[in-house]
Image (cartoon, rainbow over all chains, first blue to last red; front, side):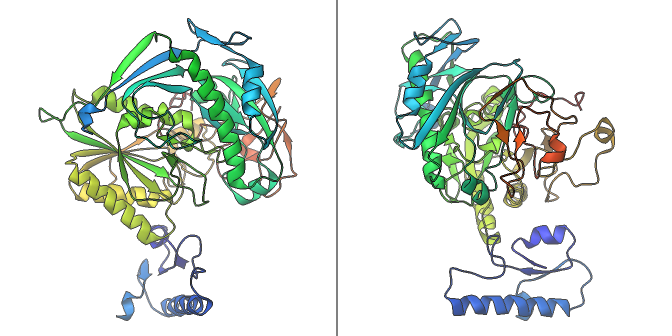
Length: 68
Length: 450
């Protein structure tokens, strides 16, 4: 689940939670130039796909820290 | 200004009787309102096409619909600033000192059906109602006397212009009625000031979280400032002088202008200040930020302010619902981790209309009462739940409009406001009874009523 508010999603029991941008626009940022907005969207989708293929044993946040 | 210098004398003029007449004035609890004068004041704004002026009293078989805001007439007779500062052309001078007179148990009620384009763009501009008698008369708003201004504006006003027109009219009338008591001697006077913290009394702060609208230009304002901003410390007397005021769009009662100058939390804390607690003031933190990081920042700065004030305890309140609870709960968590004990005052079941039957009061529902919580929030006082158990009966008198629209997606699906109204069947996210969403404990229902 891509969520602007991961603490809420995780408390509700969502197992794989990706940190989205903000409530008004979860999966992108219209304030950015189209190209950068596209990059944000791509990063979120790729992170979501990576989350889907990762085994978890409870609500887990995928905020990019797992890449470092 | 030192807190001790902030002394406010409030002169209370109760309104026990309300009538129309040509000799407007207040005398011995009887308020006489000149309807022609009121209508002329409303029509000063060319954006307003038509106005009807009605008086509505508690106990009447009457229903008021399209409630946009309620304003209690207040006027500063001494001291700096203007009651309800920062809005409707009033200067933003700091208020809270001097003398203020007000009409109590009374409000100027702005009623206006949401324009179709506003109904579609502002989800919170839904329809609301106040029943003055019967099973729907369960909130404090059924106990007040009203001058109701039913206003029809030009049909093409944009959101901020519509709000300006309606709110300006309400405040012109409220200000004019307040002038009737300016020069009189109030039958009741009370001095409000914070006692200097002393004697080892626990230092308590009110964390007064207030929704800021995601729609620019409307919502609850602090001296008229409606946008999201980092927390600010208010002296309670500023709030008594109207520093927190609502718009004339959103129908959430948590932003009602009448509520904020009559907030029972302020009365409760003033009753304890100087006896068994030392009240340090009200930190106003805005809620409903769009990004998690903004919610975190607001919560952390609120905690920091409380810690810098040397608070031992915090009474945390909120005036809204939904995702605002995240920053409220993160604030409670941070305060507790800082060693500041918290109590949270809240409605249960913050969004959904849950039909509260006698059986459910014993067993509860399967729904979590709050959308989000933290383990540190271990002292919570409930102000009750939302929904009426029975449908509202037909009302012989309807003021404020003729029809109501309960589904904002279908503005053409109109229901006669005269009823009967099965609210559970027709309402969506929350109760259309104005004031039912009561985060401060103003309600008239008790456990026994449920």
